[in-house]
Amino acid sequence: MFENTNYSVVLVKQGEIVPSENPKIPLPTPLFLTLSLLPTLPEVQVNIKVTGICGSDVHYWAHGGIGDFKLKAPMVLGHESAGVVSALGPGVTHLKVGDRVALEPGICCRVCEQCKNGRLPANVTLEEGALVEPLSVAVHAANRSGLKAGDRVFVFGAGPVGLLICAMAKAAGAAHVTIAEILFGKFPDIASTRLDFAKTYYTDSQVLLERAALGEPNIEYARRTARYILGELGEELADIVIDATGAETCVQTAFYVSSG
Image 1 (cartoon, rainbow, N blue to C red):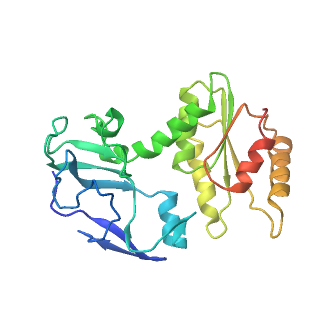
Image 2: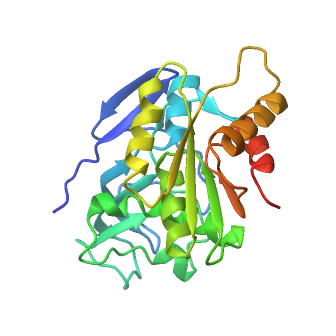
């Protein structure tokens, strides 16, 4: 069920990734953590089986970092994962070797129920388990938005998180969900492919947006794009607008397509 190797993808430097079965990478670790092959604290070792590719992983690979976080040494990519418990630390009783789990590998408090309870139900596959992390983002976004039954929702970004937000909106009773995607400069087919899938997945309308013109101020692009969405496409102002792109232009456009 589990193996002694842990297949990983290591980002050596910007633009260069290499596969590795057991990457040996120095980790900046708080004093209360002990680095070893087997858990020595009340924690478990997980043999990772499935990992999703996040937009942040792509940023690290393509640009050598994301925001203020820059690649300074080789790092293992991926944080949307699921796997099988392969070893137990002392005092662990709520899990056993062989349990299938989903996980968030960021350093957390390690003691609350939310941190410790990652066991997957028998009917959830490991591939589905790897989507628990992005699904949690969508759940949090929908909850924070105050979305309620009957609302009209507009979502920027038709990647996994954006699509999951649409699903959450429908589950919360949204009357109409629109999803928008911007054309990728070098990969124009990605946007249309995403929107084609969105037609089959919890959305009522799908909008393909052009990129800003060369030298066009972001605010002018936002106003022009909003006029296109509301005017030419006939979309109504949305009760809830959620951005799943992180792009400044989308955030600015959100204000112009919102009823609030």
